[in-house]
Length: 230
Ligand SMILES: [Mg+2]
Image (cartoon, rainbow, N blue to C red; front, side):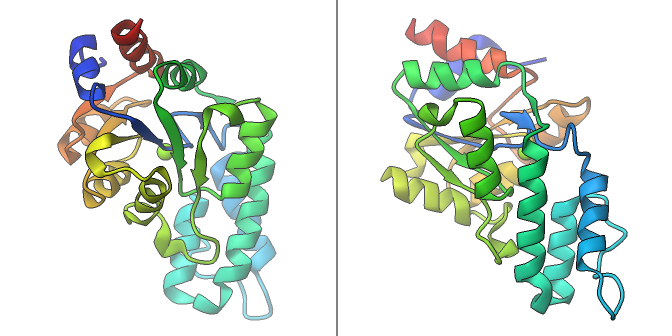
């Protein structure tokens, strides 16, 4: 169950800039091109005379990229590029999150800017936003730094970059994400996080990680803004 509307409204009241995770709050990136298939494809494309890349048993392509970074740094640039290409393919079949657009609209209507902060490739985020006509709602996109998987959350690096672009301080911002690592990254960047629990059990994990509020629907978060400002 989502946090009470008054609670969400008070959390959002001082927020001028919303930093928003992409996979989860906006769409389900791998809904049509499942993550295990993407990981398998990556392994095929990266296998060479020496065999498959490290982490070839991983079913999460981002986890696979992390493993490659840990064990085969020389493979990282090509692995990142291959994954970015597959992510672009995936977003063409992504499933929009119910309430995701309503939330973007509510942020815009209330004068809050939205910055996308994601472990996915910026090129895939761009592609999704332009295909769905959502570019006008987003001030900037901060996907993982190409060839630098360490830039991914829970590192605060991408959030700090978004804050810098917004010329904002942490207390003006909030991060909305669906993973424990999103909450950790927010805290490391000095800001609070709202958890989006899109699967059973996630609300407890996000609360435990220290999310200031948890919602089970992006519509609830959109309404908290509209009701307050409307
Ligand atoms: Mg996510």
